[in-house]
Image 1 (cartoon, one colour):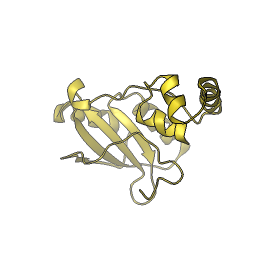
Image 2 (cartoon, rainbow, N blue to C red; image 1 turned 90 degrees about the vertical axis):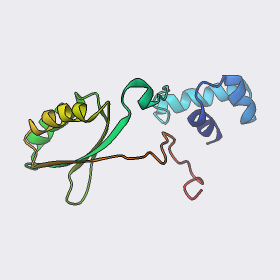
Image 3 (cartoon, helix red, strand yellow; image 1 turned 120 degrees about the vertical axis):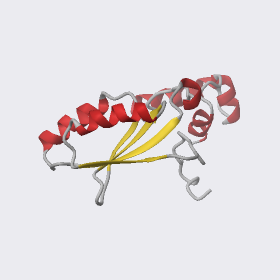
Length: 149
């Protein structure tokens, strides 16, 4: 868990730095990291960008109600959503809303382009809320013992 915590904080740390922090030899630390990669616990290592600095500073949450609840419709819808680069998250949800998408776009006109692509999939309803202020954002997954902190 300590290795995962360090990697989630900063995956660019050297193996020696991580090993020292978790009190392991570099070889033992590397073996544990490799096992976690092979088992899928660590899916990939990425750089986290500032959306505003790369021209995608507007965050929008889009709620979609399905036009129908068939596998054929879902496959078409999911394929269309996966092709939209602005969609950074795509969730099937419970309740009155069937799907929630998180978008990172440049401006309202960019959102309108996404909106037109979504309605072309024949959704029953598409609505959106625009984020006014980001209060917390993290990519870190809470590890055991951290959820209450």
